[in-house]
Length: 622
Image (cartoon, rainbow, N blue to C red; front, side):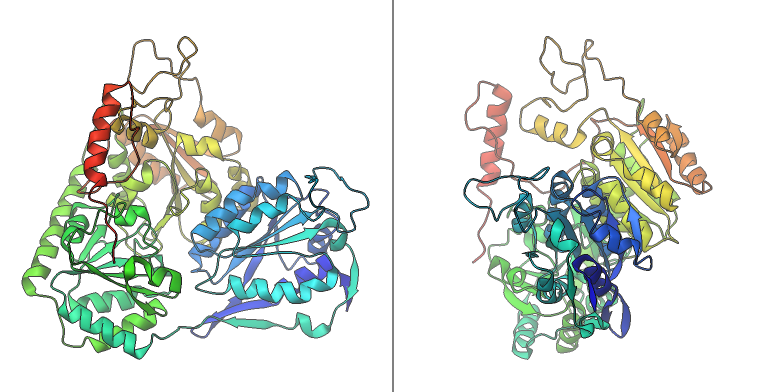
């Protein structure tokens, strides 16, 4: 079959499918892209003649990768999008999105245009030149943030590169961003491709069973533990193992703490679900974690937020069992690794532990902690802070008034910490946080991908003013494509999260408010008579992009707006100002942010003393 390289790429992608548990679906839901000179005549032309491989116009290259990642996360990594850009700034705009996808282990296919393979017209527009090599372009920047990277310098090279790209995209252990750099001249070159290359191919996603000896050792450790706990990570949800986790917990009586990616793997009201664990954890989960003698990590990579910078698990004899498809993660903390699919391992481990349960008193303590935490959530939901509302009570309003089957999307700032503690997840997809990379600007773009994956569900996007200003362009795309989003902007006049962190480090919230400089110096975070807030109208901005906007001043306004938004048939923005100084408490946890060792500021010196005390509690696990 004679066709251009770009035409062959699109035809190949159309015929790739994923399958797990007998459910087969196209691996690619289509293509996001922005055309420039580096792809318009190649991939652009190929997409034009393949309308059944749906192309969707988007406004920002970084945003399209976020949207693809959000879609892939919603689909449990069984489907994704291809993302196309021109060479130059179009390509490098995607690097942040690629990093986020790889950090979060989400499959996305990136196909940036590249410099001329034949070189004779170099330097072309937007080309980065190197005096040391002619085989380098800005696309080499994708290498450290891609799980697979290749440059296609001849049209026949896709015969080898594309199957390898699919292998990585469909691997539960190795998935992430895949980058195929496509030189703009090669995209347009023709080649006689073998017809078999375009046959339908189904990539089977296995449920890898654990080694029997490893299962037996893990069961022995669990039987011998007095205070075991489970740390449920994103792998539980991606593996569709939530029912298996519930059955395992009820068989064994082992309480559960949840990571950011794992929140929702067990309903919030299960009596042995202690909620978030770690830096953004609950009083219940963190109390159990401090004394746990065995931690059973399921599908988690143990970020510093989960381990509280290696201070959360303080039992001197604590040991770890890690259930994971990735050997790299399974061996963290000198753990006993149990390599395998989360659902398959939980089912097999549950059988191996038949009749074994934790002590009744231990289960009773976990249930008491669960109930006490729920009372604390009720307290925070009921705060009616004045004159500005508090973030915690607004989170509660969305959680209680929004539809139970809805999806909440967030990524950055102070909201993830509050949501991790306070959000009551009613189903595995109710809580969608991009927190591996915590990328400001992910929210609206990622939420668009979520809505595309679940068009029948309401999607609530929650973000602060800082995140909104980073990237709001995909409001336009949501309106163009007819995907309604409900975007909630909490305006706290700057960077609330870092302002709070700065104050805790003795730095007075330096440069974290959106205010005019005073005597050419940005003031600290303290409120003062002469501090003048910038005259930014975010509601007007959202309205100018085509959204329906509801402006709120009070909690009651906000609660009514959530109900009103359900009746609007296009993307709706709910805007409210909130108090940047009212925070949800921390609960027996700590995050290592080093404080200046010497300083002329007394407040910094005092903060350093506190840091040194906590730093001494950090552990190695051998």
